[in-house]
Image (cartoon, rainbow, N blue to C red):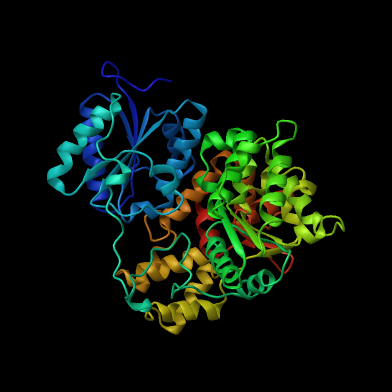
Length: 506
């Protein structure tokens, strides 16, 4: 599919955060203006969530020539916006760059949260500072849709401002979602924190931090790495979410770039990939690099940390990579190699959502070493978080919140964030399962993701109705996605919010 020219009209999808201004008003004006120009424009304004809604969203994103994404300080944390951009990127990888993503920043030049920053930071964008800019932005979008470029580039963005030396607790309340800073006062310590710090204090360990989305895996990773650095270990952190599609399409490119990434972080004076031996496989070359150039030369233990390791589940060379890590783990017990490989610590973070793609578990690195699953917050931890947010809820309301969310970390933080931002407790509870309520964005994104899995959707409906799940394979996949949990031997909804929402919608 070719990018439209001035002689052709386009199919355009407008992605924005609903029920929020200026997002909605500007998105509506863009929609109306492009329609008047003759383009076929889709915008989700009034559709009721249901099977038809989910099909319409996915279908319209995938068949679009361009996806316009409206970015504000609020929408960049929207799960639906993220989901729509993710669908567009997936489709573009299959269709030679179509749909083309056109970002529009509304009075916002700050840094985008992960993973939107990985997807959008390299793209040029249109900048809107106020209502008087709307006609210009529409004109710029029209030109870009016809094959031109948007005017602003990422290097023109102002750096995020911060007051040096501000007391930690006077820092702005961070929006929920994304990794929390090592010194963040709103971080809640769980039993997994103590376990991770205990393990990383040893030498020659493999630690896997796993859980469903939005459980705090990356936040625990940075704290574990910080402890490793404090103990004198050398560390390299590779975030697989930051890898481009060209890297994931080629094992040769992947292993060479991975070697360069590690060399750069350790400030090695040469580029290891240049000495690649054509007679060896890429995983053998990378193993030789780690052993000869790092483990034998460093005078300190070395930690190789990998965030978002599950990204490789979409790569053809995933078994080569996972098998290599497993061989490193086993090398620590080999009397001929033990002294060298005991200097290596492996620290991996993986989401359990893609586990439905694993069909050869014995080659996965996640069944070796110390596997640390993350748990939901306890009632006491929710009470602690309520205190850190200046007590927006009275004790009975904290209990009610825990009953609703079962301590799901992201949703609990989201609830307290919106309460601090002006929503009343009664509004929070009465609108909890509404599509336009405080959790609507999160719930609708899950609904959209279930679109291509009717077997999972049916199983989840049965769980929401209280019937459990007789198929252990489906239960395993739903638990990996963070939608269900085990309680007294029975599969139940992860929380009452999910039970009510999916019982009504599926």
